[in-house]
Image 1 (cartoon, rainbow, N blue to C red):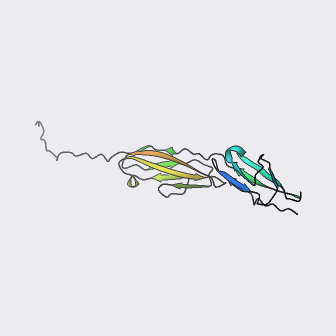
Image 2: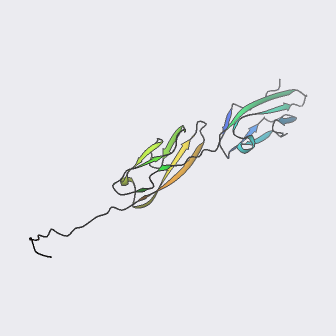
Image 3: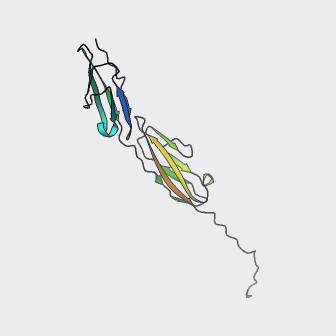
Length: 170
């Protein structure tokens, strides 16, 4: 019997590719992708989002055949948009939301949830960029950034108290 082993199911994220190897020593190779080589490179773009079955049929020098196939799951591009306060005064606390539906979240301030609080003590006066990396259920990642402008503390200095008597002027 001719044995071919492509391995177990695989996952590709947007923009990725993988090389499938049917093994050395066969006289012919015929992949479902149309390739006739020992190795075949499949890309997320070629397969499209979803699960595709990629297979190969091989023939040895005696004319005996063997075959194998694997499922390759392709994730849609992982994108998110951060929503929240893009301007804060020195006394305000802001909220940022990376959007629902992801398996995990990792913010540039080490927070690990969809919704986070932004404290002025964690920022510097001026423009600050917050980043989040989100991961989908297939393990594919997307990154988004968000600028927050922290305004300086306003300090008001009043002159010392002055006493004015009735019917007098300054």
